[in-house]
Image (cartoon, rainbow, N blue to C red):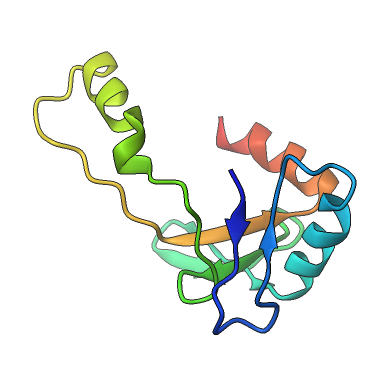
Length: 110
């Protein structure tokens, strides 16, 4: 599913992740537009590149055609986790990781 940047963003273009020929350059351009991403540690919001180096785009800077609520994923989660109340999905921000950063971050998120 392509992620597209809104017209009010500097790049004003979209990324098609299935296009492997151009996606590396597009992702590098996307990463250059990001601000450093912080994360929660206890009650604090911190930036620590030795722990996690990531960039972020706020929701005013990108859009995506993917509709999580309409995808059925929330229903599967609700059923599998035996949740009794409705779930709601909300787009918060887009975190962008470098090639080596994504692997180490995924390991810490598990």
